[in-house]
Length: 336
Image: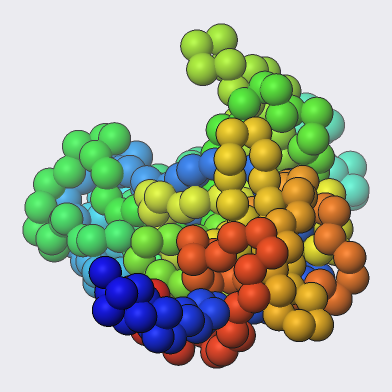
């Protein structure tokens, strides 16, 4: 027994636990509205054939950039061109006849009725030529705005029916992002608010835009309002149909923040260990708020306070600790 007591008396005291500590920092926090939305093209149209006709030429390829008014396809127009030539000839003849009768009318050799009759004939000939030109125009497929064509699904020589889709043109210089927001948050939204969006296709990248419109009607099934934001799309990286995560930051403020690992929860109480000049840890009750990027908003700490950030499970109130860098404290905790 005496030898055992002597061994216990000679055992060295345990060294203070090794922990990491950081000063309370200032961090920007904001209330955030999060939603998931779908990207849509700024403008998109499916151009269909106006008439039943044979495709004579296809002048676009897959995903080709096009300018406004650019010719994309030509349908057969031989008979319409012949009608136009005849209408032009008839119009020229009617105009010439009108000029002759007008000259005779001015010298008194023609009546007003003859002049009016020939004027009507000239106008009918002009209308017939315009009708022939419109028929030819219906067979010239042009891009209504600048953008990109879709995948080509037609070939020269094919006969298409009226209403058959010929080509899809999409303007994706900007993206319209539509996303639902619960009606309880409706009052916190307004056109012009900044939004941030991210896509799974581009991890770590943020696309910025602004709210352009809010649907005046709330959906009866989801009890949500549809919001539309517009995002610039340089390089056409975002594509229509993409699923984007939306974040709307509001009520931004600077507040005291500590790492989330520094906060200890015991029921409704939240506390952190604060170190004094002698590295003695004291438990201090705090009030927590928002969380952002691994940091949590706290109230109740003095300015410049040092809090234990790693190794908090080894610390008790009033215990003296050793402060080391984060890597050393982590290695000791894993070995512990």
